[in-house]
Image (cartoon, rainbow, N blue to C red; front, top):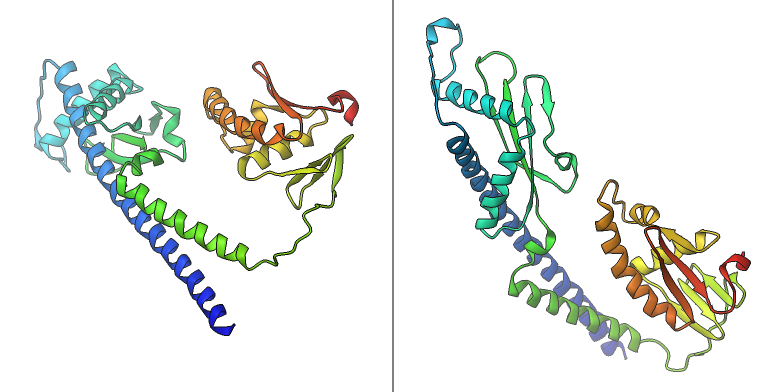
Length: 313
């Protein structure tokens, strides 16, 4: 008996170690892939700057005399400052440069989102509100000046948003995830095998009655109705809790955005996320005759079979 117990403990540790190794390897692969993407983005941004300058600056008249200043900067930096100053006056938001940057990334088959901003002296010109978004990573910041003293006269900043799915675009990633899932399932099955064989299959109905005939146990995350019970998990659980907190069992897109902590994310993005989760929630609640209906341009609402929303609370 003691020998079997040791084997069980060892097998569990083996599964945990395997899962840890898979997770560590995947993190290493993702960091490596992220580094390569960032380097490609930096190269593409440099190419975009060169193309913008070649396209929109057709004539350059430049006069430079280092004797006119006590702290002269290199002539090449002065020339580039002049180029960028002119381009910023022509397009203060630098959307034109951002568009060329996007085109270069598309040619390299790198599907990332971009944002470009510019600072002239003390004035910061934010070309895109996405520059301040936490999901956007600053990949490069170029500065030019006309004097060695003081702050740079002109600064150009480029940021990108790298989707997680782009870091997982490798066949061996899915192989590692599959191995990790197999190890986890094995561990769960071994734990289940340790439970007593004889169990009372009749679940005791407990919890708060949210409408006549329906009981919600938040600790167990279960909804009971006529001797049946379903357990909600993940985002479906968060959505259901938000539904029953409202007296009319409705859930607006604004509340959904708060659940996802989306902040100022576009409404279309929120709707897309909600659609996928509501679709899963519908399948679960259908077993207890509960429907999730869409309210156009507003959100969603729960409908129970034996009680109307208006008379339930």
